[in-house]
Amino acid sequence: MSTQTISKASTWGGGNSPFNVSYGKLMMWVFLLSDAFTFSSLLIGYGAIRYSYPSTELAQIENLELGFAQNVQEKFAAPGVDAHHGEHFIPALRDLGVFNEFQWPSPDLVFNHFPFAHGLHLPLIFVSLMTLILILSSVTMVLGVEAGQRGDQKAVSKWMLLTIIGGFMFLGCQAWEWTNFISAGARMWANPYGPPAFAALFFGVTGFHGFHVFSGVVLNIIVYINNLNGTYAKRGHYEMVEKVGLYWHFVDLVWVFVFTFFYLI
Amino acid sequence: MSSHSNQKVDIHDEVNYDPTVWVPKAHSHGTSDIWKKFWILSFLTIADVVAYFVWPPSISRNIFFIVMGILKAWFIVGTFMHMKHEHKKLGYMIILPMAFIIFFLYWMMYEGNFWGTI
Image (cartoon, rainbow over all chains, first blue to last red; front, side, top):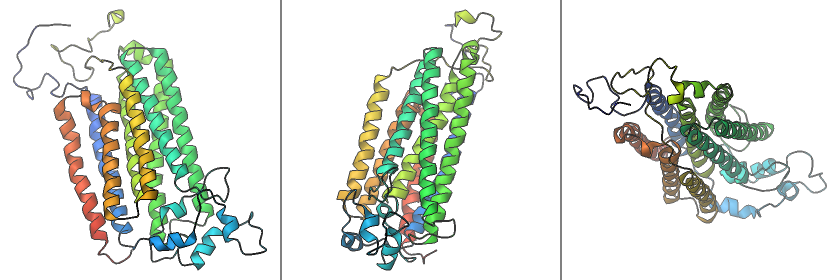
């Protein structure tokens, strides 16, 4: 590496990188900014449509007297009906007027399911788990990037593999969440919990995000295989791990806001 | 990079800068900061869920959730996406446009209150 100082026309005069960043990484940042605009437009649309409906009133929820981890299917099943089959919670809340087409459903009444805990009222627990899975897979990704900066090929393989597993776990969780929502009767045009726009936005935005996660997993697998083949060791740098890592962290970042808007607000 | 002497071009060459291959030299910043940020992000997520149940719905609660989201974004972009170690102007290029988006987001949530239902 030369230590001589060379005269350049100016910072932006060419012949150097003003941001001290490679072409590929700069372009990844530009892409992520444009993708952030796309997701922002979806979330802005969500925010406007969400508040064009009145919220479910607190008194309506408190009157239900739902306990944490209470079996709501048993609680709302008609007397003499087998509570373990069929759906009893949604029809009961529709009869009570808590779920209706003219008010936005409270997310803790919609997303209260957890795998292997059928019928139990566990609001927002599953989506919190999904968030933690995605944050953890972001951590394994950044540890892979750090290993690449040290040129440690084996460690990159290990962390990339864990990131791929984390990505599949998240996709599995999302598939479960969708299956639940669809089997309750939600469609792009219909929603047993309230306004159809709620379901349309849920499928649209989490679907768009889920497809980003899927694309990220595919990119991670490509980088993992390239690394096993020694592509980056031969190239002399592991910046491809970093660039794909940027995309993966972005997907995590978007989920933070999807979580905030769909499940909290 | 001396072990790759068979390479035709020096990927770190500042003098004969070739934008198609040039990359700055990578530096590791260690793993302790990464794990610290993991615990902060986990704590913020759990704090969000706790706030959801102890704080009745209100505009101030929504602002709290958005601020918590921006705080999480700060740690993800800064540490995980390495932004705090990048050139400052690159950071401005990304963060400043997003500042307008946050304003737009809040604006449209407020606007929605005066719409008919869709």
